[in-house]
Image (cartoon, rainbow, N blue to C red; front, side):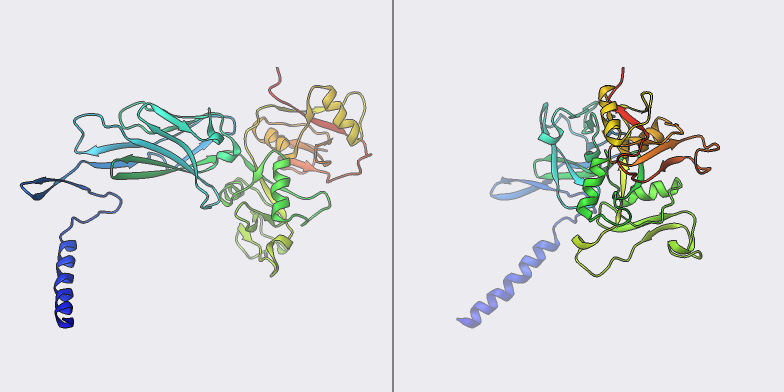
Length: 366
């Protein structure tokens, strides 16, 4: 009996293997499915239409508060004789490369449903047959990341990806106590309080290409610590090293105990930043009240950088900001206004009872 069972096993294995090798091959990203009907007791196979999907752009750039269209289209080969109802799903992955996938929108035919985070801000364009492009209204900082367009038709499931990147700028930020006081969690909170987010490596790289040169190491969104150098020098990695993004060798201790500065990212500005000095210079407390009396709020560091970058803010007078720092922005360098390069000048964090003007921020001023 044992010999017979062994013989049966040896016979069955080649039969299964032979059946598998006769199956149609699968090409690199497109699967050929086979439908079958039974005819006269026999399984009759036939090829179905092949579903394809792609995006015409790998990266879409947008400003905070603006609109963005993420392209996605699908089609069949050979073409269908009639329109087929498919399921279209858009999902989101963080720009930092994490695995936390979030639903954005699901649609079947003319019916669609969006997640709470994107409710009222997303819809399919559906401008032509096979158009599955996603329109995002009022783009938020948190929208930056990788979007996945997925089309499901029966057994077939195809997907394409589009990266949404915000156009903006990166700026370094320190704690009020000075250099290297921020854990990663504190760095996140610091950027949020300055109307910005922790910068990604690609955002830092882009700002470095635009001339950002900063010798203090700062956190990035992926929890790495780096700093950009355009002018190599001794204290910043060495004079003989080429310009680039330097990686900081972190100490061998738990990450929550490590302290650095942070690089924050800010996008476009919806309101206006302006210098305010109602007749006299003010303490920090007086400055906050002065902005409130003017129907505004004290500007954040992120708002000042955005105003300098996107609205050409240029005022050669130091003023309080919401975090207790004193700064001013220069787009046209001149005598008695700091260095010869444009930028946001900082006087650090003076004593709260020192007297200066103030920079206020007013949302969508009339």
